[in-house]
Image (cartoon, rainbow, N blue to C red; front, side):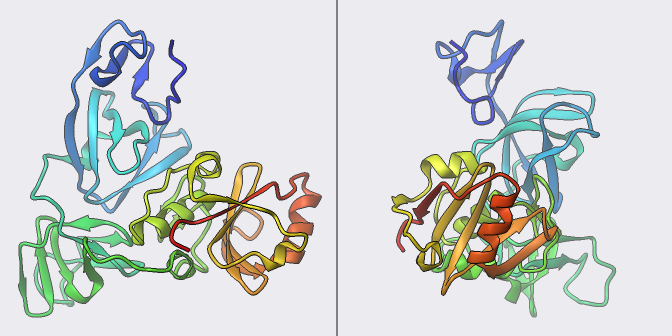
Length: 284
C-alpha cells in the first residue's frame, strides 16, 4: 500500500484523508475542513517550515481542504488541482460565497472602497477567483474588497487560446513553484494558461507529460511543431507558439521568454537534456 503519489493524495505517516481509507495505511483518518484562500497568493510547501522551497502556490479564492494544523501551518489539499502540502494557516479563512469571477489581467489592485485613490489592501493575480456581490460605478464589490470590474471575467467565460494566455506572462520572473504574475515556473505557466481556457491541467511537468493532451509524434524538424504543442524535457515543459517559436518560464533567462526553438534545443541539450516528447493540448 501507500503507492499513491503523495503530491496528489493526502496522506503522511501519522494521518490520511478519510477518502483514502483502504487505499493507504495510516494510524488515523480525518475528514476535510474546507477553507478558502484570502490572500493574493500563498506558497504551498512540503512541510510546516517557512524556509522550505515552494512546491506550488494557492491563489485567492481557492478552496483548500485542511486535515491538520500545526506550528501555524495547515496541511491539506487544494481542490483546484489536488495538490497536497502545507500553507500558512493565517492565509486561510472560512468559506465565503462561491466565486463568480476570475481576475483576467496579470494583476489587479484590491481597494477598501470603489475608487483608485485609496491605498490598496492587496493585489489579486491572474486566475484568482472572487465572489462579486455587487457593483459601485466601475468597481466590483467582493468579500475581500473592491476590484476594477473590467479586470474580471465571469467564471463561465473562458479564453480560447492557451498560448495567447501564456504570452501575457512574457517578462514575468521565474520562480520555482510560482503560479502568479509576480513569479512563475514552467509547469505553472502551462497550468495557468490551460485553466484560463477551461482545460484541467495537473501541476507538475511530469504529470503534464503523462496526462495533459494527446501524444504528438516528434517531427524531424521540431521547429515545425504546431501552435499549442507541449514540448517536454526532463523536468521542463514549454509551449510551441507555431512558426518555430516557443514560450516557457525557465531558469536560463530567469523569466518567461518567447524564443526560437532551434537554438533553444541546442542550448538545453548542451546541459544534458534532449527534447523527448511532444503532446498537443486538447481542442487544438
